[in-house]
Length: 443
Image (cartoon, rainbow, N blue to C red; front, side, top):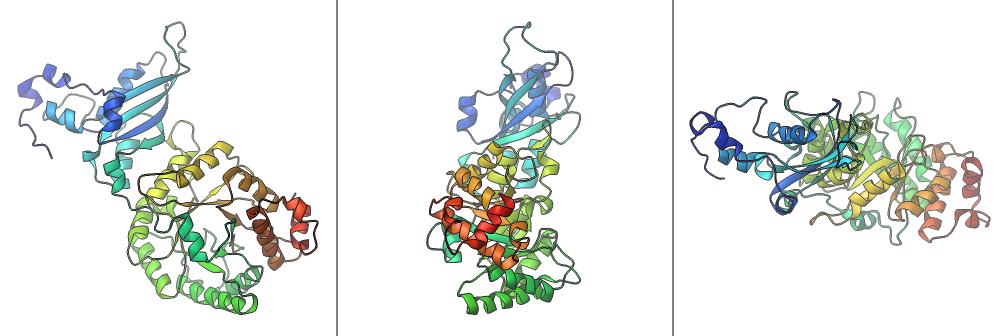
C-alpha cells in the first residue's frame, strides 16, 4: 500500500488536484491492476456533456463527491481514483450536425483493484453506483478483471469433465435433469413417489423446484433421505443411478447450515437460487471445504436485474462469468425456445462465458431449461453442442403415457443427440415409441 500524503486540498490548491486527470489510456488500463467496467449509457438531457458525465461517475464511484472537499490528495486521486478509459457513441458521431439531441454510449471505466478485496458486495457497490449525486443510470454489460484479481477466486470445483465423471457417464451426450412438479405442497414421502416414477425412466438428475427449499412440511433432511431411498430402489430395478439435487436456498448462515445438514444426510448435489441469495452466498458455499459435491446455481429472479435496457446487469455477465467465478458447477438458465423471449445470442453468450478460458478457473456446465422437450432439445444441442444439461419439466411429467415414459423419451433423445443423429430419423425405428409420442405431441 502506498503511504498517503498528508497534504489536503486546502494547502496544495485546487489547481494541483486537477493535474491528476480522471482519464487513462486503454493500453495502460488493460495492462494494469484495474477492474474495467463496460456500461451502456443513454443520456436523458438534451446536449448533455457525456464525456464530463463519465469522468464524474468514475471519480464519484471512488474518491469523489459532487463538490471539492478537504482531504483529497494528488496521490489519492492517482492511486485510488476511477478513470475513464474510453467512450464510444452509438452511432459514432464526429460533427455537431450528426449528433442527436439524446445520445447513447458505451463507456469503459477503470477501477483500481486496491479499492476492494476480491469479493462481490463491494465490487457491486462501486461498479453499480453508490450515490445519486455522483452516479448515473447505466447498465453494466461486462467486466474485465486483472489477472491478480481473478486469481483470488476459486471458481467451480468440478468442471464439465468432472460432472460427467461424477455422474458416471462415459460417452458424451446431453445430461437430462428433471425438476419435480408440482413445485411445492407435498410431503417428502409423496415427493419420493414422484421421484421414483421419473427415475424409472432413467434420467440423470432430479432436482427440487426452485420454489421449494426447507419448509415446515418438507424438510431438506427428510427429502434427502426419502429421495435417496427411492433412487436406491430404482437402481436395483434398472441398474441406473439417478442423483437427487436438493434446494438449500436461504440466507447465508442458514444456506451453509442447510448444506452441511443435507450432506450429512447423504445429499449428492446441492442447488441454490444464487440471484436471490446473492453471489457471495454461492461463493461461500462453493469454496467451503466441507462442500465436496456439485453446486447448481438457479437463475430465478434474474429478470428483475437484467431485463432493463438502461439499468442493471447483462445476462452473460451475471449468469455466465460472475456465476462461474462464484463457483457454480452448473448454472441453469433459459433458451429462446421457451415462452420467455430470450435473445438467442444471449443464451449462446452465457454458455460461452461458462466454457471459454478464464484464468485458471474450471468450466461451468450450462443447464438449459424453460419448456424443453425433445424437439427444442435438438435445436439447443445444435446451438450449444452436446456437453450441456437439458432441464426438462413438463415434457417428462406431462407425457401422455406418464412420467416414466416421458423420462425415457428424453433419455432416448439425449442418447440420439449425443451421437449426432436426427430425432425424427431415429423415432421411426422400433423401440423409440416414447420419443415418437413426445415429438408428435410437442413438435
